[in-house]
Every structure is written in structure tokens, then in C-alpha cells.
Length: 145
Image 1 (cartoon, rainbow, N blue to C red):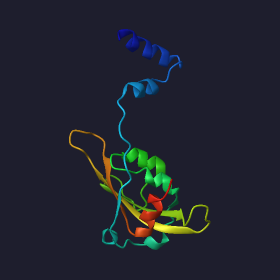
Image 2: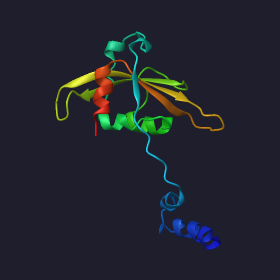
Image 3: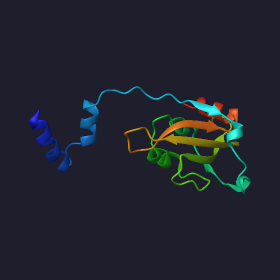
Image 4: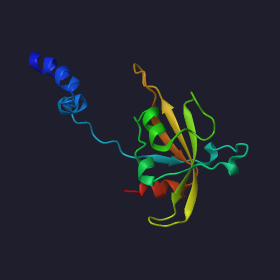
């Protein structure tokens, strides 16, 4: 056991071993989170110049990875910064564009809000809920592969 802890820093320092892969081998398997979203049109208040927001065109499969427990850093990498100037808040709002159907050139405009929670005893803030303004947007993401 001691040799593992001694050789790990040496081999990873030489670039011969990826320490993340070794830790992943020893870590217990965690069940994959399931995508769950709610639809609540009343949660989306009219914002100034909302209709002029360019938003982001993203793959629905990428948005589907946003499940409870995912941290803000991962969401920021996947779909970018929130579109309504939120910073250190517990809610991020986005304007997203998806292909209307797989392989289609038409796009559908969707409003999405991600709500965050900081579990007791943890430092990182994680997603707790994904809320859509329209049912068609939630269905499009849920159907993505």
C-alpha cells in the first residue's frame, strides 16, 4: 500500500501515469444522475430587452447533462455564462436555441433557469433543479441522445 502512494507522485510527475485515472479506479461507482426538469412559465418574469438576447445555440444532449449535483463550473463550461447578468446568485437564466428536430436547420428559442443549492458541509454550489418556460423545450432536451 505504501509503495502505491510513493510511486504515484513519482510516475505522475514524470508524465507516465495519469493520477486521475488511478483515483477513478479506486473510487466506488456512483449511479448516473437522471435528467429531471420542470416546466413553470410563472417563474420567468419579463426582463428588459429580453427579446433581443442572442442566447446560445447548444446541443440538447449537452443540456441534458445538467442534473442535480452538477456544479456551476461544469455548467459554465458546457453552455457558458448566464445570459441575464447573474453572478453569485442561486439562479442562472439562459436563452437557448435548439434545432427544432434532429438534423433540422430551424431553431426553437427556449428559456431555461437553473437553480442551485449548497449542500450543508460542502463548499461547492451544485444544481438542484432545471426549470423550463415551455413544455416543448423540456421535451426536446429529454428526447436528446
